[in-house]
Amino acid sequence: MTTSLSVWQQLKQRELTCEAALQLLVDADGNVTLNLLDSEVSFRFLREFPDRAALPPVMPLLLWRNCFYLGSPVPISLDDIRKMSDRTLTDIRIIPVADKSYTTWYRAQSLDHNQITVQPFVNPLTGQQEQENISEITSELLSRAADQIGRIKTLIAGALRNRASDIHLEPLPEGLRVRYRIDGILRDITLLPLEISRRAIVALKVMADMDIAESRRPQDARIGEKYNSGQDADLGLDMRVSTLPCVGGEKAVIRLLPRQNPFACIDELGFTDRTLAIYKSWLQQPQGMVIFTGPTGSGKTSTLYTSLQSVATEHVNVVTVEDPVEYILPRITQTQVHEAAGMTFAAGLRAILRQDPDIIMVGEIRDHETAETAVRAALTGHLVFTTLHTNDAVSAIPRLKDIGPDPGLISDALLGIVAQRLVRRICPHCAEPYTPKESDLKVLGLNWEEADTGQWRVGRGCVRCFHSGFMGREAIIELLNVDDTIRHIIYEGSMTQLHRYLGEIQFDSFRVAAIAKVTQGITTTQEVLRVLPHSAMYRRYLEGGSKGLMQVVNH
Image (tube, rainbow, N blue to C red):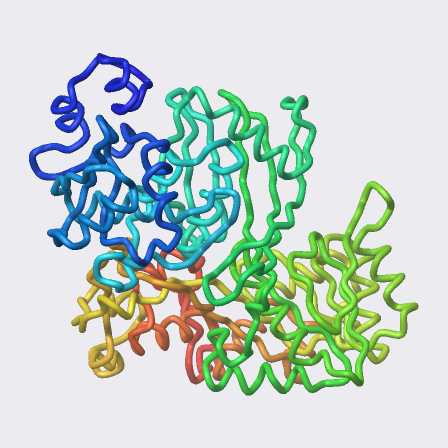
């Protein structure tokens, strides 16, 4: 019989006997069908126990003929049964249930769907912190939410608990697919039923103050919320929300931006000892330009913000123009691009130069005017940070020249170029030694003597890393330090000459950085191949420079 009524309601309507009701609720293995429980039964029992800590591990199942049927995963003493009976003025009967059913029910009871709570789950039976099964727990908590906004907040809480950077809500014929981006990889979490898919998107639009009647055009908005992490209450959370009309409805993406400062220290960004020393020397310069390159999601923003915070002392004026402003940084003046109002990168940069800046950050160089102004600012006593979209550090030079500034100005202004990608780190909880294969050495261009195989590792996969073998990410960095020779090549040389020169010096290429990450047991060759551009691993800059050309090694 298909019904939306709880077992308790069916029992009250005489559709079931008490024994049949208990059989529906608890199977032979003690597993409880939680969606058939009635919240009124829990309320009537728990209201008598304001201090939940005084209760033994029990969960209300039914109330029938002045008797509470309680499920418990452990034996309950006669003394505890008598105390509960005296407090509720009812008889008490204990039904054995599975540990998992009790902990899941306890977790749902402890959750306030009106708040975004990211406290780690603690097993009420053991008192130990417990790693959650994302899909299972999220589905269960969603089923307990009272309304659509509660469901959205449950999804946000689950994403924050599991280090997700984005939440994707995608309409399908079967319902609304929910995915989290964790460590740069999208993971399926759950599927919301078709009947609530549209309502969930509308609820999100209400939270973001979007036009709920408009579903034919994309919309963008920002949400400010508070969340509780356990140690700290009411932490700030910014969320960028984007909706897109598509086949089957509207897709929504939520970018999570916790306001607490995630940019701690330059030393933790992923630079090698050599590249870190070079990069810190750039930050100490009174003027010049530093360019960051890489695709979306490569960590450029984190590196930029960390760098800005390290130089933003009380003695300097730091001003940025960004699109959008993702994090609010202390001691820094941040401005937002608004093209409809005429506030472009170029217009913002011109305005900044009238604000007596010492250090300038331009979110992206997109056109000739912005490039020209940024280069001239770097030549007139300002330290300028900016970004370009190129595959590697070397490619930024022809790209900048193509946009239009005079090569002579570029060569004088440039301090250096940083290209980066984010690679996943091997999970420390399931890491184990790994003996590289010939294919691994071939990818990195190493022989057995150079490989230093003693520190190679691989992640076996565990519940903490969602059986991926990886946990967390760090930057893999290619750094081009612009010396006098490179300045001369930029001014009147060719890319062939630049590649020849890079073969003669100790160029900190992606390949060199990849070798360091793999041989130190930080990541794997497969992960390096996943994130780095094809040319980075199959192009070798010749050592010694006698031949003076690039060698392409094809596998």
